[in-house]
Length: 137
Image 1 (tube, rainbow, N blue to C red):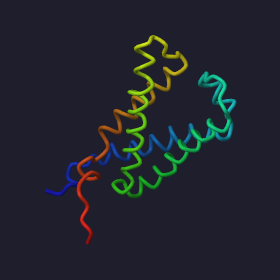
Image 2 (image 1 turned 90 degrees about the vertical axis):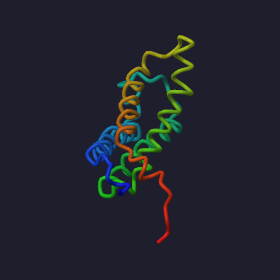
Image 3 (image 1 turned 135 degrees about the horizontal axis):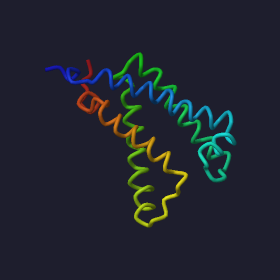
């Protein structure tokens, strides 16, 4: 049985498109119009350098996902990285704030969006393919 037989190609492509539009668009917005993004998402004042780094990273995810449309399995680690950092954010940031009763209301939209990426990535990522032992030919 080929390790690619159970790849959910449609989901994989969907997650690349979702990342291009969502993360890429969000990153471009942060870079090109940071004040508008802060107002639209009701973010508190941000250090422009750090906020710019965040925007750059999101835009990089979007750009790499364009390549993922051409070579879905080759660029699946992009989605895996996205799943990892969002999962770490949930466990390391969101849960402690929720348990302390101090989760900021403005972050609710971000929490919902991140949850959709986590669920989508868990469905789409072909773990058997990207975590299998590679043999050199």
